[in-house]
Image 1 (cartoon, rainbow, N blue to C red):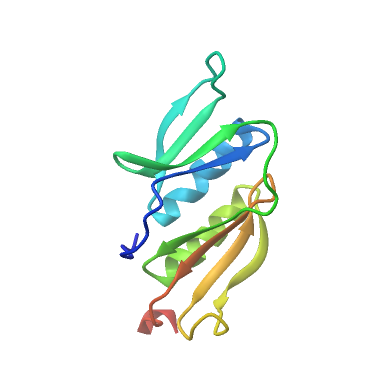
Image 2 (cartoon, rainbow, N blue to C red):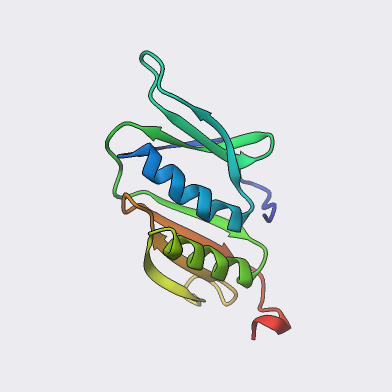
Length: 139
């Protein structure tokens, strides 16, 4: 995963309608962008079921079982290669996601913006993006 200085977000909680379904989807998709499941906390008293993903040892993305979701959420993951964008898109479709946009260059953002957009099981908009110029093997 690329390191882009200036990103100061520590973590994000995403409300999902069914943690088990979402966990299965994210377990299959997130490794393509260098992210893995690190923690899985069952519901306990007032705390809902939560599953944490990140880069060991730090989770930064939490699925939280609130039985509802925000349909306007858009979450983008930065990767180093266009092949990783392609792998993210393929894994998401294989795990039951739906394609919003196939992997492609998006010059409206900048000339090297290569991204793919998918919906997760709740319809949340996920993206993988590579900001690097095409490598000779990508052409």
